[in-house]
Length: 417
Image (cartoon, rainbow, N blue to C red; front, side):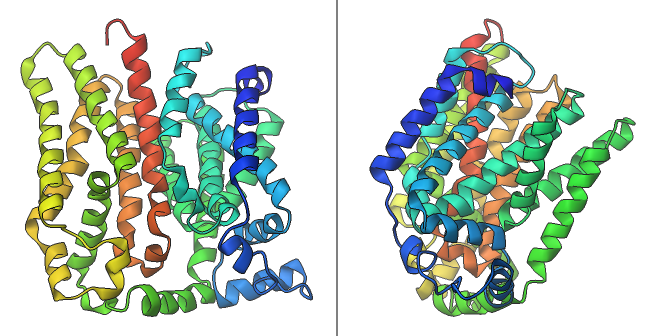
């Protein structure tokens, strides 16, 4: 990570982000009413006592909750810490897309920054600035760092003591959040299986898997999570029991994919992916049938857009309290499910055509693409997700930022793709 400290561009990014944080961020919503007060973390309790109380009564994410409580009472420190995390996030995006090259190209950084800026950052304010950033962007930055160290380890690159220390801190934080621990369990297991077949070293992967499984068990057995589940059903999703298993799958699938039709920021980022796939396939394959195949991507978007404008297929986030027979019928209809599946799976064809000559990279990119969307599909089975609104799309946006950066760097740099 030496180039992170030596390269002046990241210092400029940090200063800009810090300026924006100082200009725009103030304690808001949960920053004040929950973590900014002493209701959740009473002053007469020690950290251990308060953490146990929260674990038993509400949620097992004790590390993130304590950090939020601390920074809600020290908001200036939060602005500085958040600026560092955001800068690290941008750095990690660039390191992923430029992993196998030592050269640093300014135009590639601009591409990464461009796609990072396309994320709808107002989603990080929906529960309060400190609350949302610490519970969502911070653990995903920790997840990216854990993945980056594992990537270096499995490619037999040198890892410094400082990097191992930061890796340990990041792993501890990431496995205490539901969305991120699933990624670590899934991908560390995949890497272990891959390495066993090729007799590669696996110690760090196994340690990561064991820690992540322990973190997942810690989250699942929390009594507070069960209590929270009951309260969230009654408040956000009173008609939860009326949905069948298939309805829940369709709800998660259609509401996720059609967000990329409804939301301008999501749709633009998704369209950038489709355009990038088309351009690379057009340059790489002389056969016209390949890029006609990529053109079909846009047909599914147009069909989905027309269907959604004419007759909204799934209820909006604000309408989940009033699920009735009509909305359930829309969710369960075969047409929205079919279009959603095409919107999800068709880009995989383009990703395969681009990376067909690199089996490992092709498999990992398509796996990350599909798993990120599946992570959002779980909303059909978790009433607590509805309370989190659009910020639960962060995993999908991070995935699109990474893949778009890879594709457009390929387009701008490669004379012959």
